[in-house]
Image (cartoon, rainbow, N blue to C red; front, top):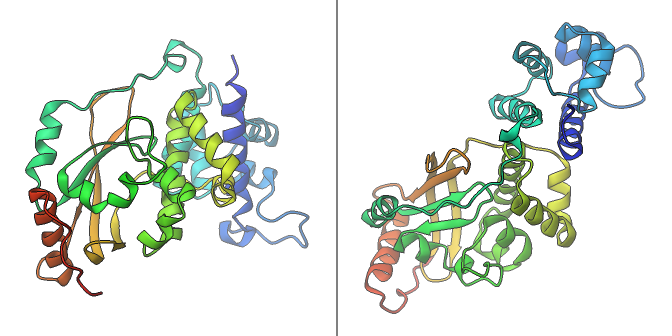
Length: 299
């Protein structure tokens, strides 16, 4: 049984784009004169991966069901995929396998009380839980205060849940809130791409991607680039309407709530002894007491 057509398209686009990004010189091959299209030829990838050209051509057309892990690993090495891209390729192959596991509907998972208690115990860090579609499904008080522009955005769903991708691409206010909107937007699309590889049959994810692709050209361009991100973390800067400029360190952690629904616990904190820590503490105090917004703090 072949993989579904939408899964084949994902595989085809991903492998073709990664092949186009490599030059012969990068893999130790002669340039061979002028090329009609950028990147390696299919036959060159096949030789380097140790498979026939016909076989690799079939693979790049999306017929990945039944391919061994050794062969996929050889293709990943040849295309110089990083760890996230390699995981994505294997997820696509796994999703293409026939069987009842690939046909089961995903069910939303409620965040259990123990996780909510954990969130509430973090009073000086902004902590929240997201699902694989980047919906915020649980927060502590400081996270709600930090991401107040998102929670007050017209892009929240009917349950009042913000979604990072919808906020970035459908609310112009996100450009003022984020100090580096482009990077945040890039990461959000790459995370959704990885989720699509894990769960290509997720109807809610397909609807989200369809909505954003229809409305936002910035999203369409990034989605077509087929960039993948699974593990991420680092520093993000905000222009908060109440607390002023904030430079915060963030780290997502896998949160195994269900075998069929991916969740992450993300924590934002400030470097100790910095003005950012003072501003974050001020915001935390405001969030904890429910008092009026803090006095503005200059950048």
